[in-house]
Image 1 (spheres, rainbow, N blue to C red):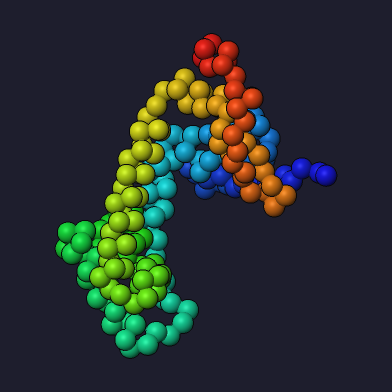
Image 2: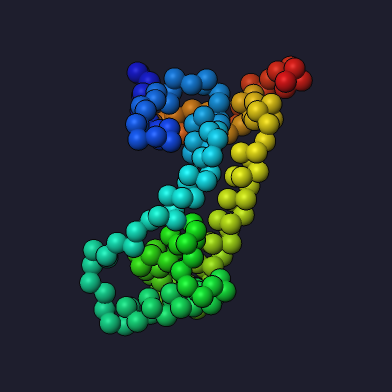
Length: 179
């Protein structure tokens, strides 16, 4: 069976896009296969993409009741986050009508539960962005230790999706000590 070659288009900060063979990297590297957070300023770029997300019109027509509940959810979320208007940062993506509709429908139209769920997701994402910034600030020597780790996404299935498994027999203790 032939290995699947995955092409990724990386944004290098300029207008040119670079095609990169993802499978061509070191086969045990977790950092290079992730969301690109191994690059400098990748977290800020991801937050900027979330902040610039447009609020596109919905593809379907909502009922009057659902539209009213969507407006109530918008107001309830602003109160839960203690903001006067829609934030200009990455949290803006949580205020798009499509995303609010997703949370509203997940809670079967219950505005209070949907607001609580959305607020919890914003809180969770705040923590994840904080951790991503901490990871980005780590020295390269610390990041290199994760390349030698025996856990995490180490392979790809036949569709090209990463597969996570534990390879305890492949743990390179000598390499960890040397690094």
